[in-house]
Amino acid sequence: MLAIMIKATLWQIPGSHPCEAVHTAMTMKGLEVKTVDLLPVMHKPVQRVMFGEATVPGVVFPGERVVGSRRIMKRLDELVPQPALFPADPEQRAKVEAAEVWGDDVLQATVRRLLWAVARHDQKKVLTGLADPETLPIPLPVAMSIAKPMVWMERRIHGVTEETAKTDLASLKGLLDQVDLLISEGVIGGESPNAADLQILSSIKLLSAIGDFHQVLQGRPSVAIADRVFPKSSGDVPAGVLPADELALLA
Ligand SMILES: N[C@@H](CCC(=O)N[C@@H](CS)C(=O)NCC(=O)O)C(=O)O
Figure (cartoon, rainbow, N blue to C red):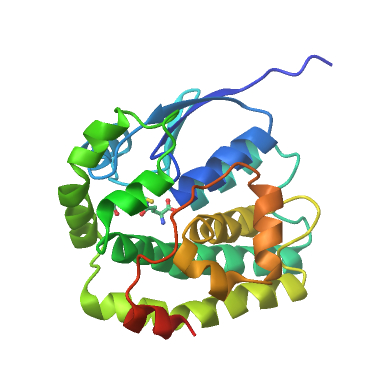
């Protein structure tokens, strides 16, 4: 039988964890993927016009536009059932869906706030370490010239304050323990990544790009699985951006 390849365009911020999750899911499903690469902050008006919501990822499928990583994962499974992103068994499916919701609402959001919290100490070091010149929509020196207002705006958009930075740093170990628990229970970490794997491990992969998080991540099974599911580098921000009092909160 002749398989028809579905063409779809992912509107993304390169390196954004939910965008990486969706990109990997689209590739797993064998879609022909094009990307439109946007800059943080500037993506908001673009996405609002394109998708009616101001966030990435958004996907243009033939004849329809879907925004939000969870909605996109569900739609992908309807359009191309194999390999499945959700288990057929209802009990297993419920567990994967619950883990996916936690991965989106709690882990993804915390990792995003942490990223901008770390960046507030050294915008250039963090953004240079995360940027991939191949997918950056503008030349790196131009991006660096607007790094400070960009990080300030992102902190405002996501409500990153001195208080949230401290609370999030102190909560990270517990969140990573929760990921380890999901692996030990077999909800994530199986042979073929499910929607919860993609949602959760894309956050772990982004965290692992930041040197100051290496110690709290060290030896965790989630790091090796994230590297398997997302083999491409997520960047390299040298350790030493966080001041000692904030680093201590990770212990
Ligand atoms: N949790 C949602 C939203 C993702 C999200 O917040 N993406 C960030 C970039 S990583 C964004 O677009 N932020 C802009 C905003 O919140 O207005 C999803 O997984 O699709």
